[in-house]
Image (cartoon, rainbow, N blue to C red; front, side, top):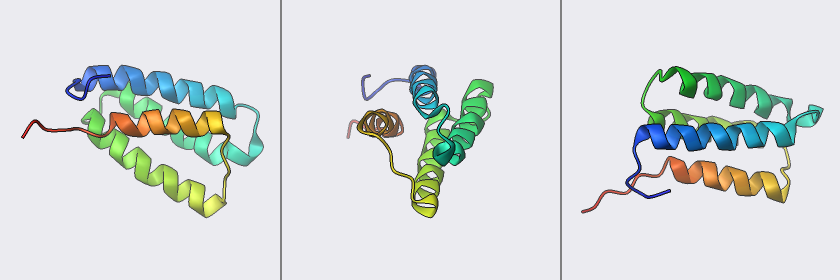
Length: 95
């Protein structure tokens, strides 16, 4: 995705990545907190409640709080998907 991509493009990609993460977590009771978090933010992205970068930024903060608090370990595949998801919240300005 280009650095100058708009909110709707970021939202579509974020929803795709969240769904992939949900699929990789499915059935893993140790990661249910992450699954619940993704469900909330997936709903928020689908409803366009606020700007996509703001939603993604909040999700990143809450996600790492959950990971730290519950000492959840992720697979290398899940880590790769999370890195892609994090990149979507980074906006570069052409100054």
